[in-house]
Length: 209
DNA sequence: GTTATGATAC
DNA sequence: GTATCATAAA
Image 1 (tube, protein in one colour):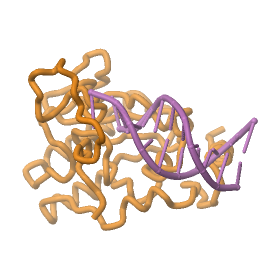
Image 2: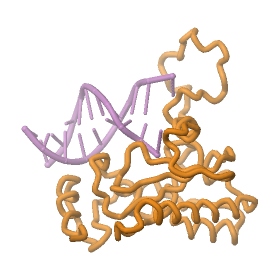
Image 3: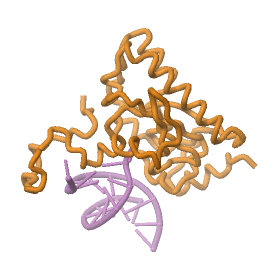
Image 4: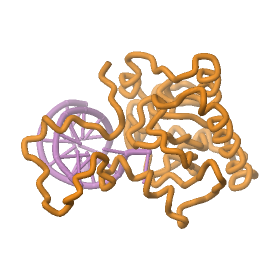
């Protein structure tokens, strides 16, 4: 088990203590940390694409495809590890809202979409990825980016809902982090590509004409 | 929702 | 020169 909670790197390994003298509060959860960025952005009306009493939708700051949104609950749920059966209806609602956003903003795009969660997220606050399957974006730059959406590292929303329904919680297979190191493989035709630039060139082949 | 950067490999 | 990899950030 090499996985860890998002945004909780071990402070004991740092050579210098983070002395700032500016933050006298010394909170346990530093909101200035990069891993807390979602908590801030989701509150910003400027970024909200959709909002209701339970969830809010924002555009991914670094979209890995032409359409890439995040559905977040207002409730403070750190990650899938904190999800229980009491969140079942919320998860279903998040999925429904994701489908609505697709319909409202990409209804005539004819692009295929997938809805799901990263098995080991980097950012705090549980978020449902709603992403078109073109993966045509300058923000898609490395193997981790690709494999996090195109291996079992990407957990289908429907599978998560079913898991919570049947087991009452979400479990992640051991070795999931290793999936990020797998060779690059086209999600449409399974062809292996030797590099990101060549993968991107190959993906053009599958664009709708 | 890590990205950005510098070191290292091809 | 180009692409990947390891590391820092607060």
